[in-house]
Length: 366
Ligand code: GLA
Image 1 (cartoon, protein in one colour):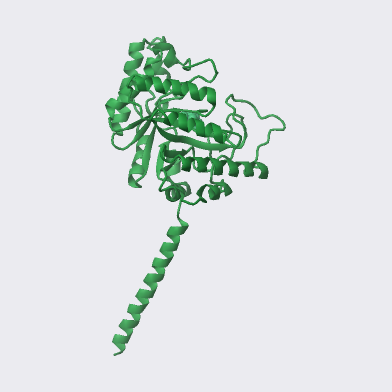
Image 2 (cartoon, rainbow, N blue to C red):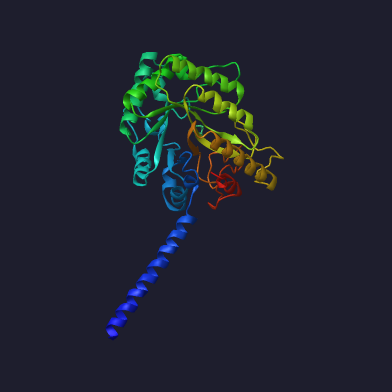
């Protein structure tokens, strides 16, 4: 009898423990709801990573909040193909493996750019610039090798990065790619990528894409590529923004204009500097603010709320939003372009806690 009582008692105890365990698990799940869950019905939310991000507390945050990753640097030509006869795969491979293990989407970044490009690609053994034929052959070999390695794993590639000139008069940037090949290398890059993985979505990626003059030049380039039947599926708007721009009007106009070409829109490198946009490196000046004052924070909260509201409105056109870095603990904007100046452009603070702007981004009615 006692044995039966004891057995029933233990049985009950197991049920009670089990159900309270389940309860706390489900409470945890609610607490663990991240950006990717709030935006589940909208678009994947991604983040740029390095191999360091894949460990420790940053990895935990990453898996809680994001559903897609982009390699911040490891797939750029300089990093992955430092010499003609040598590819350095280790870091890019581990980023891809991490994404596969955790079921994350992967955007590839990037295949052809005028920065972070190794010198060997433009020059011969005596240091002279190579011919157009040689450069295109090298570009083809590079793109074919990298895209094939990650075929079926990387679903979208930033094929060509930042070819539009910064000054109003310059259409295509006068880079070494342009000097040697003329405009043709742009279309070729897309063709090589498409041949290597016909399933991958191919993007043209650039910054200041909402500023009207640059926007119209980008539109002109994209339209031309589409008319020439170049395999291009989308435009990457980097979205290295600030609390001062873009305006709601400029953002909407840009989304509408690019979408009118039938292209998908990815916001590929989102962050929101607390300082006005600058590109040329300089020293800190006396009087330069370099902390997140309450006023700047309020502006940032407001700007994040505005742009995400617009993203949600255009969910038919926008198929991905990726942040450039995880938190204010580390951002490429620390010290750029003003040496020694810290920036605070993301939704998580230096302790990886959600900032107030985060709440504004996720607080909406579906
Ligand atoms: C550009 C590039 C990125 C990155 C940022 C700065 O936007 O596309 O790869 O280098 O600059 O981090």
